[in-house]
Amino acid sequence: SLTIKGVTGFYPPEMAINNTLLKTLSELNYNWVIVDETIHKEAMPNTAYVVQKNKTKVVVRDKSVSNYFAFHRGDVYTIENTAENIIVCVDAETFGHHNKLGISGLRSLIKNSRYTSTRFCTISQIVKKINEMSLSEIRETSWACPSSSEYSLSSSYTYWHDTHNFVQNG
Image (cartoon, rainbow, N blue to C red; front, side, top):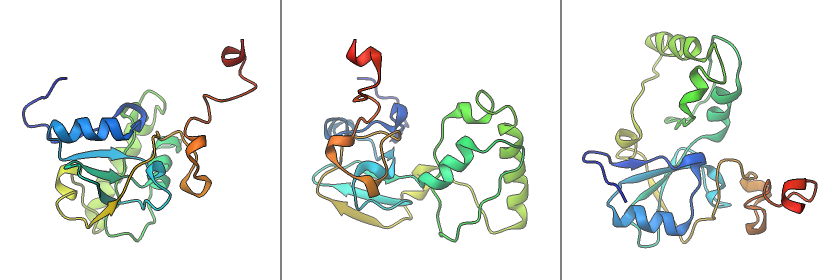
């Protein structure tokens, strides 16, 4: 494992998480890991959770706002959300690779924030301010898993158990 000095948080690829990874991050003294709200049927966006004896806080992004940024095509982003804190997490490719106008949209959001009460900060900064809640366990999941309203442990990898996928059934 590699630990880089000064890095306090972890963004797992595809936000894939399970209890083993969480335990490892805790042992490596990471303060937080960003995850999708599919980690638990009662998980709420924009919230930090402490799971059992792990020191690493599990920070839940706002999936609806994050997906808006990830899939909106255009050069202007607008957010109408009344939450005090909104935790947005997307791939860097959102602002160029998948969306050629994405960087322009990000610029406009930052520029327009000067006229509102919107402020930007890092996860490391916000995790010190938001309320912590506790969870007894987390679900093995990623951001591609079904929403918590469709929660079931058997549906953690819906794309992997596709009877119509010839690669899986070949």
